[in-house]
Length: 282
Image 1 (spheres, rainbow, N blue to C red):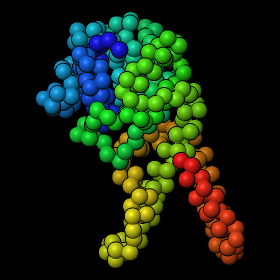
Image 2 (image 1 turned 30 degrees about the vertical axis):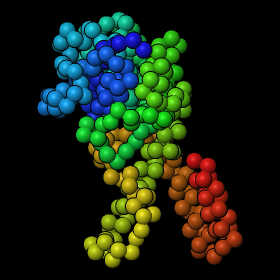
Image 3 (image 1 turned 180 degrees about the horizontal axis):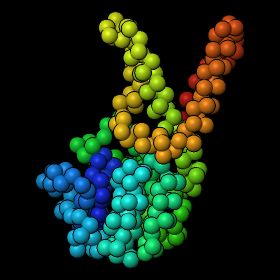
Image 4 (image 1 turned 90 degrees about the horizontal axis):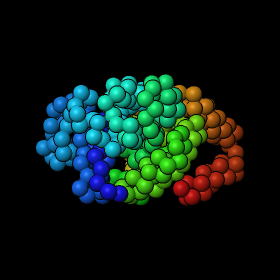
């Protein structure tokens, strides 16, 4: 890819990592930061993560080749709208939020200028968030879902961009994406939170269970350390899919209780064996 000017609104883990990856993979390109937190923008510039920063009134907005919105799902269309009239007609606008259907519906409602928009989701979830954890290789060999909601030429352009950052691409519809990540990402996070909450309510937690736990508990509950504000937003944005997934999970719990209560050892071994075999395929 030839040198481009990238604008990134929202310099958290994802936005900051995109900035670093662009500067590493697309030499000579310029990265401009946008956002409400001027102190964070100044810090990002001082650290060399971005080359400059600006707001929606700046002439720099019209020079952007890419405008990437790295904010929670519910704010993407609002940010798009506030920048839309200043953006060039040749710009490619992209979001990187975790839930796609509400984003695409929101953009469709406000995109009176007909700007080219592609929705993407880098599958690089972490319990860590914030600019301080950003790194240039975050997307290397990681899946990035690209939603097939735009012109084929623009989708190909976006796919090429992510490949330069080292990502592996999956093309899906918004509905299919949201249904899948409800089961593979959002529900597991809530389950990890439920396990943590269950343990926290137990009186033994005050003495850390006398040390009677191992790495398995830490691995199971690690993702519960994620940003609560962010995960509340994700959960509500994808509520219908997550609810269905949690209902399915509750049925599995009922099955396990039934096997234990009725001392069905053979069936329990079979259940655990199938779970083991599935996990080994991931």
